Length: 129
Image (tube, rainbow, N blue to C red; front, top):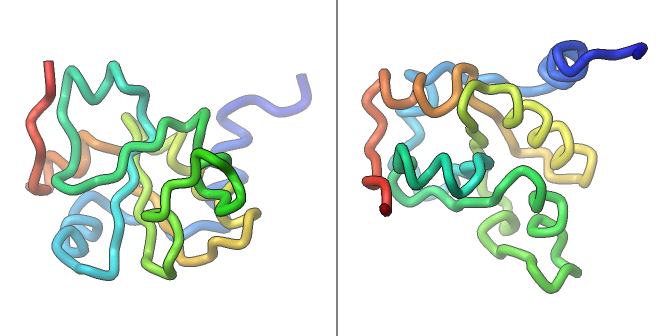
């Protein structure tokens, strides 16, 4: 193996805007910002998510970001800043890199993921069980 998952995340992070939980929380009520939760559905059922966040599992991101795809989510277009988060900051870094490669340039991710956002006091939606 020439690159580990850790290597890929580090490589992705070099070219991305990385926000701390506290920096991201300051954007939580900005109408020009969309939080995107790239965790799996089971994770959201256990923990909830950022209030108003769009849920796009990492495995579907490229398809739901693509306006020509039948599963496109319009929230991922329109020129708003996309702030991606996951459970730790690794999947969101890879996801943000993929979006940048697709031409979506106004994108950032949260180091430390959802726990960092919670610690910083982000408004949350409760888990749906």
